[in-house]
Length: 144
Length: 321
Image (tube, rainbow over all chains, first blue to last red; front, side, top):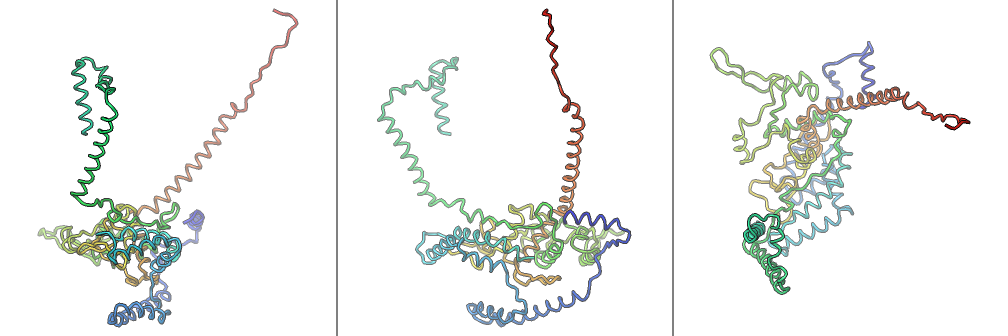
């Protein structure tokens, strides 16, 4: 609420024709009804899709979901913007050193050539820090 | 400690030698115990022996305890990234539409394990719900009445003055139901955690698909980089589309996390909007008073500032005294 909102509020309160509503104004049914319908549709359809996807191999599942997303663009399949933005950031130039170290560590540890009891937590932290830092302002532009 | 006791002992010896009454010379006498007679060879041997003992003690420690892995980043947890929260700006209020969505997320997701015991229904009125909605919500739960004529305590539907119900009867029941981990009360959680809103948002959305290679995750725990120690008993709870928002906002994981964190910030600081308005009033009033005081000072000092002191030398008289 800015300064001029306060001024206009004062003027509104002083004018004799102003109306004051203690309760929330009554809902406009025209707006709420279609929204409820669409959400019901999407939930019903996602429920129907779930068993089909679960039956398939886990490797194919990601591909199948990706295809479904392409097919059902008009259905508003929800994609988390944080995931996509951070993936972009992880592969961006500024996070390249962190990603390089992390990948190298994963190869070392899974290959068994690293030191005994070595883990990639520190490298993971550096990569996650870089990715979230880069995605934070973009994410806030997307979210409501 | 050892060095200090050694020093003290030489000091006592020296004082004994010089006599206990002679305190002023004590420091001088400790130096004069034949330091000039030390040969460079003996000093070198002493230094080499001290170094050998130091290196040997480290080697002994490693032999006993193996490599030292203390203060690892995993122990500390990943520090939360700063997010540009709008409600944290100086002259911004909570987004009450977001609070409403966040309360919905709390009620449908968090409330099954986490209590919010310091928030009464009445505080929801006007900020998140209307009176009727809050009353209807309160009446969904039962609370104890006052004892009746026979001393029995009966149940009654909730009123606006009641507090949000706890999911468990007590902490022991909560621990028992959650594998020994106590879900913390969320009323003041934003104030109670280092990093506040950023930490909780990062924690909720930060679960990776799988822990990084080589990381050990304890039994019954989940890997979360933001939790100190990285092993957290709470599993990931927010998934895309878990909640159907009444205003049609797409319920992605990060959207739900953002809304619920803003709601929790409201729960911890319900006075924030008023506080910021009061701060603005203070600034307005004090700036007016300051301006006034500058003018008053100018007025009061005018006679002093505008006076002119003139030295008028006496005319040179013809006669000399």
